[in-house]
Length: 268
Length: 317
Ligand SMILES: Nc1ncnc2c1ncn2[C@@H]1O[C@H](COP(=O)(O)OP(=O)(O)OP(=O)(O)O)[C@@H](O)[C@H]1O
Ligand SMILES: [Mg+2]
Image (cartoon, rainbow over the protein chains, first blue to last red):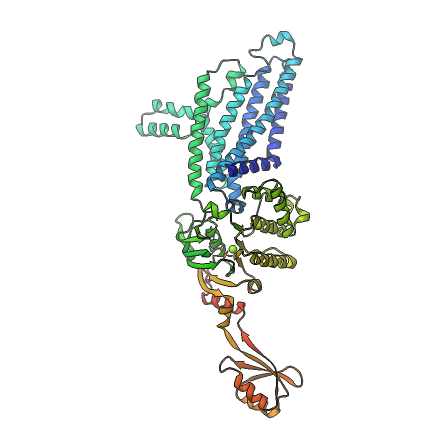
């Protein structure tokens, strides 16, 4: 366990030093600030714009951080051979991989946390500067704690994506792993369509394949509760619970497979 | 008990993307290195030295054969605690300083707090990086990174240390430092297994060597024994050699070279021994200045063993 935490700590420290996440977080914060200016053009009517843009930038920039750092964690370490000195230290390859995953999740939490603080500052400022009559028309308050739910689900989704990235990077090159992960993320958001595919096509085989893919590919659409939260529509707790349980199972399956692949791997 | 043992260790790499064929990088290597030995693992480029080291570190899995370190199968976590490894062309994390990197590795070895700080400082000084310890590794020169690599290999006071070309990238002073480091390790009872191209280093440091070429073991043993077999002849320096004696010797096929006006060197074959001739010359009034056996150097042995394998050319491809 100690080894896992040490590896995780090193990942966190290295990513804190890395310029990439900073620039991504900074960019997200700029976008949030810009959304405030845009909303001003409509005289504060469009709190929605601020909320939407903010959540969207968290999920996109979070994705970029998860993919680029996530891939770098293992694939780059293998490619640059920094892994040689590390793997001969007294720990197993399993511990190494799990430590990397934990470290990246920590990094994601820190980055999302920073973005969340900026987000609430922009929203708080909007709250203060908007006239009461306009506020009355808002479906939800500006500083709405329910936004944290949406952000939490973004984090859960990113944890799945990170596990995907880690899985690919245990056996393919950094570039290939990046493409595969981004591909799977895209597929994950249209996954629900695969389930309905069977009803549309004649061929049993095609329908079977579609159903197989549906279960194999990550199903990421349920993690997206941004619109509901922004519009003040209630989200069922059971939906959140089930989605989180799904995330846990999917992550566990991916990490187990990644560990099994990684155990037998040759480092050349 | 042997510190390092391999038995019929073999490694194939698949080459070719479309229809991979196995390429044998290491063929049935059987070695045994006793505790406390300094073992030089020599061979030309592509001989399979790094492959062997990676198999011993379980960075590669063997196609067949087994390897044991300190009596346990390779990859055993309890044995990893007692090992040090310097990879070939080491590379570490760009954003960490050498001090941070070593602190991280020391934690993995189970060092804590003040103990850890002292250990890291000690190894940094030992490899001569005390002044550069706060420099990001990205800003380090090649030789500095090599020293960081050495520092992390000795961090846990290993019982067995594996060094893949420890002298590579180092300046003459650095090489001397590494030689001294290896002597200190030996004095502490540590088994040192190192690969190298620099035969002079091997000759100066090793108690045993193995020569590998094209994945096959060509020679192995104590340096003194490997080279003792190869007595090539004798070099006899005499003075006051009378001219008629000299002519007589030359006619018997002895090569004579003048050093100065009254001394000359006689080159004698290994057999028969030089004793009879020395006796004969002394009787004739000449004086023996020195008598030296001419042996093979490690380089002669290396060239012979490696050349025996032949080169594989493109055949004018
Ligand atoms: N990943 C790989 N795929 C295919 N062949 C490989 C691979 N790694 C090494 N080889 C081959 O295995 C052989 C041994 O390589 P190795 O790196 O062990 O040599 P070496 O003795 O360390 O050489 P050097 O002195 O140049 O470091 C070489 O012929 C090399 O081409
Ligand atoms: Mg090598």
